[in-house]
Length: 332
Image 1 (cartoon, rainbow, N blue to C red):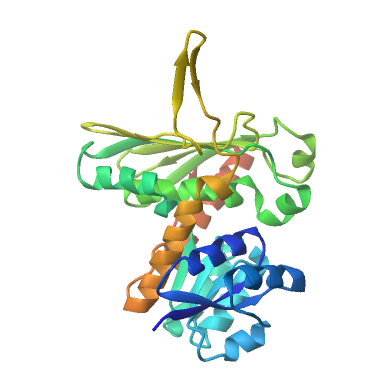
Image 2: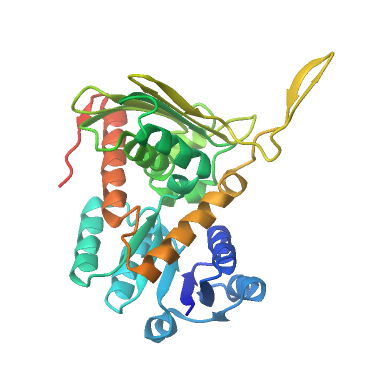
């Protein structure tokens, strides 16, 4: 029997997840909620399901799980609501911008024995998964140092920045989770710096548009993360992990991976223009993994705890950028 899922939030990421559900033969989209009727209608017309309010979704015993694509400040309350009503939950990162609120939410999840998966989609990118497999198989020995580069083509609107939690908790948090995923355990400290190099308005919002962080592990291993809100050449996503016996890299992906050579030189196609095209496969893979988990009673990864850990590191990076000092990391 197919698993029935509901989506809360019919914006661009809700549409991506609706497409992923429609492409999974073991699941179906049962309901869509969005305060904008036109947005919900557009999703149901394309991918199926019915328009419903939150109470209807909560009380519909045929709905097995919900996909939360709502604003961040709604996530924790909605996770608790659906956990207490027997629904499995997939939630876009972060659970909340306040670590204390996240801990309280995860307590409810544990008490209700609810299934919760957090949307760090890059763990499900096929290229990064292959990189992880190369590390796990011992092809480069023990991973010792890493470099993660993540640069957006342009900064988001001011209204988004104001609610997002800033570059460390909104953008770099993906790279932080990837560093933990690839290195295999948690760092003990973070040193970070930030600047405003692209738009003075971002400084007025008490945020940065350019940031670097160095995560350090207890045995001296390190990962350096570089973020920028402006890459004029496209969506820049690269990873390099250096180990005791070699190195593994994941290069930038392009919509068309060809290279032409003429008397004028070598030429390649442009990079993807943003995450909606670069990570379309990763979004589908993570929803497939969530559906598989709730169908078979497996653990969901990334877990709520993974989400909290990434937030704590991002908080430490922000503190370091503001104080100019390395910040020890405590995961309680």
